[in-house]
Image (tube, rainbow, N blue to C red):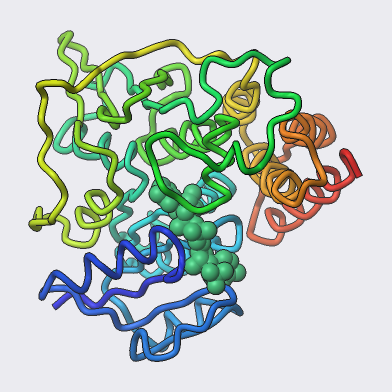
Length: 350
Ligand SMILES: NC(=O)c1ccc[n+]([C@@H]2O[C@H](COP(=O)([O-])OP(=O)(O)OC[C@H]3O[C@@H](n4cnc5c(N)ncnc54)[C@H](OP(=O)(O)O)[C@@H]3O)[C@@H](O)[C@H]2O)c1
């Protein structure tokens, strides 16, 4: 029996994870956490907000599924990696913000880090058993979100409601806006760099409107392996919770007849957050943390109607420009970089 701790149990990933646990007799939910919603009785150990590592200490899980949204998920990511407990990671923001610290913690802990993000789960599967020198490059696919094909001047007045209408995925509000700006693909680019140890120039992003191909790895012999399936997060959640098994799920099997596989280059002038993320990742240090923090604050301001859609990229740009990006020696340096970026981003449009 695998003892699962689920952080972010009330969210989009959290609810789908509960469904996977309930239908798999080999999985047992021993702990659950949320940010504010009551979850009494959901698991033997529960916690609402606060320091989630206290819950993990008490529950002694075999696997932690971190599905908290944002930088708030960082202490749990570091705790899990440090102790060598298997980490099923949906909370990409923690790996983006703390890439080097997280990898060092994994090195010390010696446990598994299994991506739950569908693109990274796909790439993890394409790369399994391969040596680094065999890999030529990776491709992350993006649906393009609800504003795919629009130009900058067509995005000036878009509303939160329009940004939240994602064409292929049903997700939490923050990641849905990130998908509309392509900041999500920027975060995923940095996440892929840290997860797979691949240089930024070897990671491409393509727009793929139907979200059937989740990721593709190109190899040095000219072959490419892709991972396909209907867009359904229960697949990567189940994969991470039951690894190395591949447990059955009720997700529909892919029907190729009638399935459209179209790929387009992203428009990084209009969706500049993807470009800014790549630059922040390449320059390194605390810049990915700054990118993430400013983006979190700006998305919240956009959802509250305090910032226009295009203001999200402006806020991130300003925060990056104001930061020296000096590497974080420890968590407190990172928390400081995060806080400074949040202050700058909050002033944009205020
Ligand atoms: N949704 C997807 O399909 C998808 C796909 C790939 C990756 N991801 C990643 O998975 C993560 C979760 O996404 P989501 O779409 O599931 O988000 P969501 O629906 O907004 O849910 C977020 C969850 O985090 C909890 N939370 C927020 N702040 C917290 C805190 N300080 N302490 C403890 N719990 C806290 C929330 O609790 P309350 O409800 O009580 O506030 C909620 O359970 C994100 O990092 C996202 O990028 C999501």
